[in-house]
Length: 122
Image (tube, rainbow, N blue to C red; front, side, top):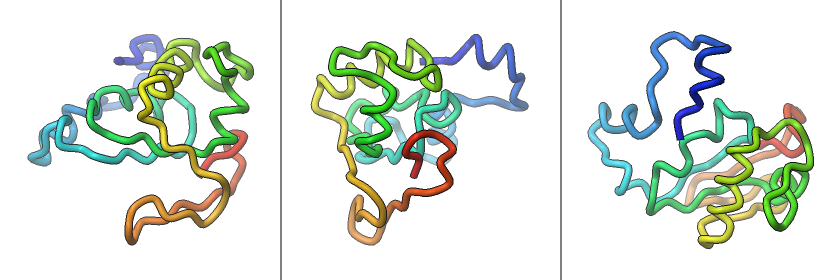
């Protein structure tokens, strides 16, 4: 997904879609196996669906706070198209929901909660 309305509003300099950015680094989006999402704001979550073989790691409480079981937006922090994408990723079995602080995602990579930028950012 390309967040066109946010690009127009916030005007990030040299914006590049995540799949294009990793292509510049010599990777194809299909090769990515894990993506860690810090929180549901568009500039951290949009593009998660561009990695078709990746497990998407995010805090369970972050998901549960922002959407219900069918993808209805519960909190304005998440944009409706992102709620749809999050719901689709969950339905596809691609979400790996983390429960709390200091969790190992893959060997040698841990996530920590904190800051409360969103409900349960990591």
